[in-house]
Image (cartoon, rainbow, N blue to C red):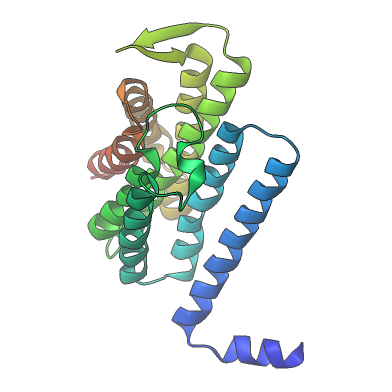
Length: 228
């Protein structure tokens, strides 16, 4: 055990950071497998993985990981998810009974936000990813479990409960990130209103899983523009 820790601490910082992220993703996978064995639905497992993997952006931000790692991971997982629609590499992608490219768009959005913001304003990338991670993830779960007031947009079934969850969670995560970056100033509490409204509208009008692209990128852009 001591040898392992000596080896672990002797790793270059980048290698150490990658191991930390890999360990977190391993825990997410184990949790998903545990839910699968307990009889949870495929949609619940997808959203748990969706939220768990999205939180990697916080680790990357805290560890100040270089942009090339995020870009490389985005390209790699984009290729893997595209192949998974054809071959059973990630069977869970097609296990929810609807046509969706959401997992692919998820990977692409991380790469786009890393390129756009990571070098100069990483917190905008963090806002975009976390709004998608928590807002979209919890909105789907709340809407399916407690949604009693449905509405339709372009033949897509939504619920007001899910949309309200998206609005509130998007506001909460945006406020917390801005609070940590710029402190308790008026922009910290007002700008997230615009972010939350934008994210909720994009989620409501998106189809075929494209909200995993439009929501994070739209949220990050609105955060950046309003905070100028």
